[in-house]
Length: 325
Length: 252
Image 1: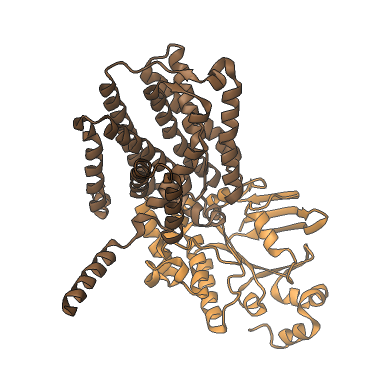
Image 2: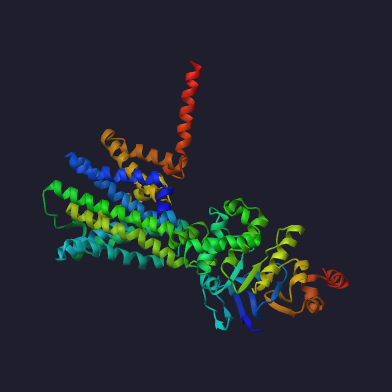
């Protein structure tokens, strides 16, 4: 464990500072800041989840919104039928995990683009089921979820701490997986699935494990989110935009690493907010342009840039300027 | 000596084509047996059938007294039935050592990463790649990659090793090195099935030869007997080559 911490000490210190910053937003007495912090924690948790299947295993999954949406609905329905709050959240998490494990056994037979398309279809399929099953889910009218008790500011900070707790849990699980047998096997699958099979990796089981890990925390996030906003409907819960945003965040930060998704999700949410606030007409276009730029020029993500070299180059340039004058 | 691997009437059809047809043979523990045959004879398909990569159309496979006909590839690997690939299959972005450690960890059933890495270093020393242990696998030359394949499969502690053209693409000096290595592996008690094109290699180290042609086993026996078999001469060796081999007295 010590060597593990030492190897990425700077990263871990920055992460701790970052989490502390997010956790202290309620002290600012600014509801907007808290909302952003919740959003960051939520997306970080989902980006870290996606990283198990998309980053480590190399299977481009687009089913995040399905897991999130099912989490929303299971949590909401459980609460409406009288299950206590925390138990309802846990139930949602468990249900999503089982759903992903069962689904993974089928969908993980597909590879590459086929898998990507199949996983998108899951989102549409679950959305259609939820919106057609009116008796259970309220259909297109959506569902009211019992509100969390307390003043609005209290509720917001409670939600923030829960989201942060989920985020840190996924982070710790990521570290454990990355340095354990499962992570090694997943890296083998990522690089050469046939060879992984040949050295004795039970590829099917490993992929299902990765897919399930990528799902269950999204389920938890969804359930908590539903309790926070108090109302859910199919288009909001199973949003295609969500399913695409999360992988983009991981790619932005650095896929296959533990810190990359944290960096990517944070940067993405902040950028999105910045453009939303300053360029109301053009924000989506600007964001899209940035995504294209990043993916073309930074395929390894922000984490793979050699900051030391950038710094040295900046220093050199300054020195040159000095000698010129 | 007991039979460690036994095939009974194994067949594989791809649509209407019988790639492997009614093949039966056994490998005795500790033997080096060569499997030869012209291109497209079904040699690699046979390896894929034995290691669970492809399902059999008909027939049975026994390994160490147990029927393993329906095993999957990873199960074969864990049982001690390892193979190398004709086209080498490294994990390109991992280090040479990590490649071998993967074999030790998953195929060799070692408990921890550290044990697997120690085992990997031993096997790399055995095949002579220990100096390159920390370089990325993608940086190795072809002979280096072939050695990596060997080290990876040895780290799985195999009982039977199926070597699919480990010498293809190597020059004479490299082949001599590979031969020494194969002999050293056999000395460790590993049974070897050598799929090979080069008669020089086959004649110099194998105790028994199996000849596959159009998916059928057309001859089987000691190297000399097989060389003299008319069907083998006709199907594979050619009359001229067989005569020369016989004249040189097999001591290649």
